[in-house]
Image (tube, rainbow, N blue to C red; front, side, top):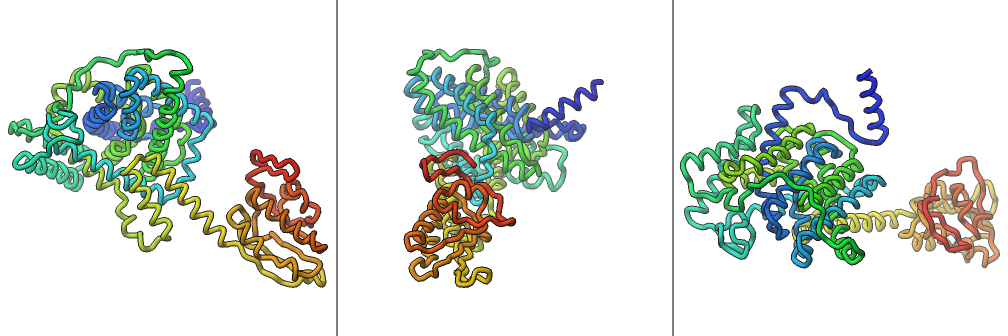
Amino acid sequence: MVRSTFAAFAERLGAQGLSQPDFKAYTPAQIKTDLLAGLTVALALVPEAVAFAFVAHVHPLVGLYAAFIVGLVTALIGGRPGMISGATGALAVVMVSLVATHGVEYLFATVVLMGILQLAAGIFRMGKFIRLVPHPVMLGFVNGLAIVIFLAQLTQFQVPGSGEAAGHGMAGGEWLSGTPLILMLALVGLTMAIIWGLPKITRIIPAPLAGIGIVAAVVIGFGLDVPRVGDLASIKGGLPQFHIPSVPMNVETLKIILPYAFILAAIGLIESLLTLNLVGEMTNKRGGASQECVAQGTANVITGFFGGMGGCAMIGQSMINVKSGGRTRLSGISAALFLLAFILVGSSLIEQIPLAALVGVMFMVVIGTFAWNSLRIMTRIPLTDAIVIVLVTGVTVAYDLATAVIVGVIVSALAYAWNNARRIHVIERDSVRTPGAHVYEIEGPLFFGSTDKFAELFHPESDPDVVIVDFMRSRVVDQSALQAIEDLAAKYAALGKTLRLRHLSRDCHKLLAKAGQLMVDSDDDPDYELAVDYSVRTGVFGGGH
């Protein structure tokens, strides 16, 4: 009875497009690997969450609570086991102006609204639109994010207590020099060497965890004077408390927080869904985009009510987890719980970890994340694709991920439209079945980008009295194409010549007003549907026909 009930529940999950738990994957060996991977991720999350909290001008615990709650919820119900979510810099840079202008309570309200918008995106299955992101954009995304992660680590090479963000590891401080710099570089190099070499000897323990542990033991054992996690800020705290944001519940508040919520929701979903695809390629898993939207939305709604700054998927920590062997939801769950344990009882120990060890881990993430093959193929791929890779990389570094992806998709779409616009051409011949008639066989798609060239293919003045246009090897894509056919029919009608249209789809028969009566029905007419519903008589454009 219990087994049949569980089977029915699993079937309902599958019908809703939700991933089902694979309990066969939870072997003793995998459980151990997931727990160790989660511990490694939790150690790397601490300085990241603290640094991003300072970027947003909020208390470090606001970032740590966000990392815990967002990480836990998305690990439980997210679209891809193995992904790690938490407070991110991409969101923090948007939040800073809101906090500076209106205060942290408005941030919490914004995070709640951000989550609601992401929930709506998941419910309406908008996550599937991530499929429209071309591969060159993905390459630019990972390359740009790798550079951003690298640049973020450079702030750890500053003297604690200097600059405008004293002790916060932010840009603007004095750089290390002399012996402190040499010692820092040596420890970073040692960490990277351990992560590179340990897997060649044993895989009992994740290499990043071993690197952190060994370097921390060296620093603590020899009492080396190097920057440590505690130099950023104290991470000691209690459990996050439920708290309704103290903001006026009126239209004015909505006007303030809605623009920020929309931008944060978009950035969070774009980064999360691209990370989902990247992790999917590494773990050979597919799907789950809409489920990830629901998970991110749920996590941010909860986070906003528990004093967190919100978050999204983190590509760096996700790469650490996957490359440490984390494959099930247990790795993400354990990472969140370890992070909470650090806050509650382990702060004094975690604060002793040298930042050099964590920087070394992140540098190895950078090396593993950057798509080095994209450099080798630059001269072998179309010029447009190469430009898109470089453009998305540059915009990601200079501005933000969402802007970079949108720019990359637009440029790719325009390049695709331009290439297709050049593909349309015609084969002219005399008709065999209709003596004296001239046949134009159209090849290539007819859409807004190719309508001008389509019009240039015909010679109404010099054509005979009967002209046949055959669309067997073409496709009418949009309203601009329909209008081009109408205009062509009008030209021949004005000259008193007969124009016949063959092999147009049934919906074209219905949508073409003036030229519709010129169509010749055939048994092999195509049955594709237009992207838009067009009426010449009313001039109304609507949804898919």
